[in-house]
Structure formats: structure tokens, C-alpha cells
Image (cartoon, rainbow, N blue to C red; front, side, top):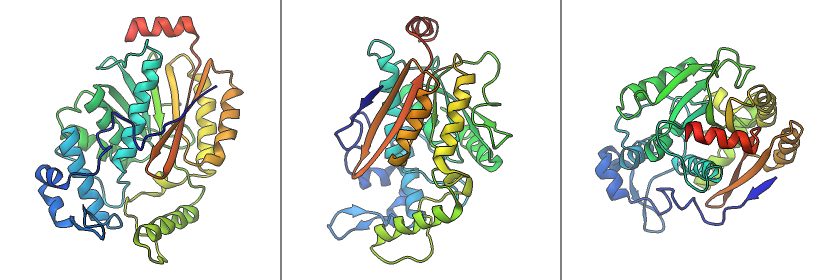
Length: 315
């Protein structure tokens, strides 16, 4: 097993390594101006505990860096922090490069599967803009699928490059999404990591309390999030265990299976579960966003000969 550690704040190719240039962001999204003010350090910023400010900042980032001019999500659905999401994509690109003699494969030949595309469609947006990859995105929530489809249809760059599929069985992860004969260069997943609605609520209270430096009794969903986006029975450990089982069935349909692991205490058990399936390669990739350390695991069942053939046919 290979473990890759990251020492810089964000991936070096991440557009968001520097502080936000709010003047430039406002030029791309004028609505942001009303939420920008000097903070206690005399720097321009927004109130990150304000859901409307966070949403408008995301719109500005997507417009300025990724040429997405039309991005709307339903009320109270997850509004993801874009820099961290971008890091996952860039480290996935590095993972593909490791399998391709150091060169990142780009363009429409590269097909990814986003498990849990959400209403925001964020991973396909970033990956298509930066690397030109195509995507299939799945979700168990019909509203999320409708929202992602609306984003795709209203941004020309995404049309014909992202397809959404409703996962009809909430107990399945990959099953029912991959169709006969399809091959994916990678699967990415950001699973709901809380075990219950109560745990998700408590986590949000802690988060907002830390942001505001005040005692908060009720959660303010500054980044939004529906139940299915924030928690599932058994939390991320149960979710990823099921994904691992299904990866075995689809062993030759995908080059790299990957998933974020939010809770470090779950990592050992998840790696143990993956090892039990006898992957050819297993990696843990660490990422750092400020003080936060995150990671994803990646595994493949393709041997060296099969990997070479895959590259020859697709990359």
C-alpha cells in the first residue's frame, strides 16, 4: 500500500491557493459586493456563517475560475466549499498520471463516475473545466438530479459532457448505475459521513460555533445540506464498506475506485476491508486545506498488463 502525504495548504494546481481576490470575484459576480466587508484583520472577506454569502461566493468562484455563469441550487441543499472539492480532482489527476507514465490524461476520452453528484454538480464542473473529462453522476435524490441537469443544460460547456442518473435503490452504490459494456477511468465519491440526523446536527452546531466564536444552540446550515447529503445509516464507514463490495463486482469496469474518508478513525477499518478484496494497488492520498487534513483511498483490480491495455485503448 502506498501513502502519499501533502505538505502545502492546497494542491499546487488548485486555483484557490491564494487568498480570494474579492475585487476580481465581484467583477465576475457583482451580487457578491453586498456581502464583502473588512474583517477584524482589515482584510476583505465575507461572513462564512451566512448561507447567502457563502452561496454567492460560490457563484462568483464558479463564474470567475470555471466559466460557469448559471449555477443555482435548491434552497437548503449542499453548497460545497469549492477549494477542497478542487483538491480531490487535482489529486485524482495525479493518480491517473501515475498510471500513465507521469502524464495527466485529458479530454473527452476520460470518463468518471461521480457517486452522489448532488444538486450542485460541483465535481464534474471542476474536472470538465480544468481537464476536459466527461462524467456520469448518480444520486438517490430526484431533486438533486433535476437540479444538476438544470445546471448542465444552462451551461454550454457541460452539455454532452455530463450525464445524470437516478439511483433507484438507496441500498446500492455502484450497482444499477454502471451500464453493460461501460468503462470508467475512475469513480469518485464523497459519502455522507454522519451516522444520524442527531450527529449531523451536533456537528453543524460545532462548526458554526467555531466560525462565529459564539455559543449556538440550533444549527445554521451555512453550507446547506439535506439529510441524504449529510448522514446515512452507519455513516461513511457503512457506506464505503458497501462501495468496496460492489467494486469487486465491477472490478474490470473501472480503473481506479476512489472515495473520500472524512473520519481518520475509520481509515484503518476501510483499508482492511479493501485489502480483503485483493486489489492490485491500494493507495491513501492525504490532502490539507488550512488546518484540516482530509484524505481519499484509491484501489484498482487491474494488473500491469490490463493497465497497459487500458491506457492504449482509452488514453
